[in-house]
View 1 (cartoon, helix red, strand yellow):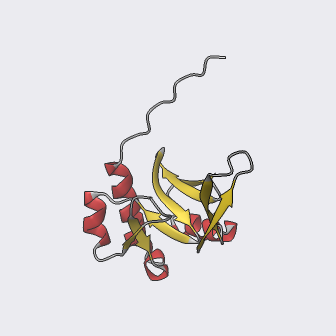
View 2: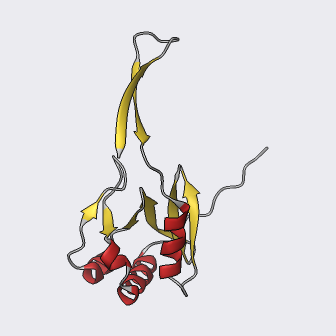
Length: 132
């Protein structure tokens, strides 16, 4: 649920900016449920802008937005996912596989999708050291 608002700046009276405000952020209980369903895989969740990113083997393979799991789209993941709906977790984002509650309960299917998606994704680039 996104709400759009426009705000005028007092410093620049002729400029109006549009902001999107999330009505609902992801519940920590939902994250715990997802991590439980992916056990024994070592999946971790990191907070990102009020939502969460899921990581497996050091790779970000999914986002959880508004209590919905979105797994990144890969060729092999598409073969496993089958007829799963694709949707964007937020405006402007790349579409991902929107995992329904019934599919979230299919442990073997979910584990295979996560493993194959992670395998297809590149490792993140190492961060450059900051010079202070």
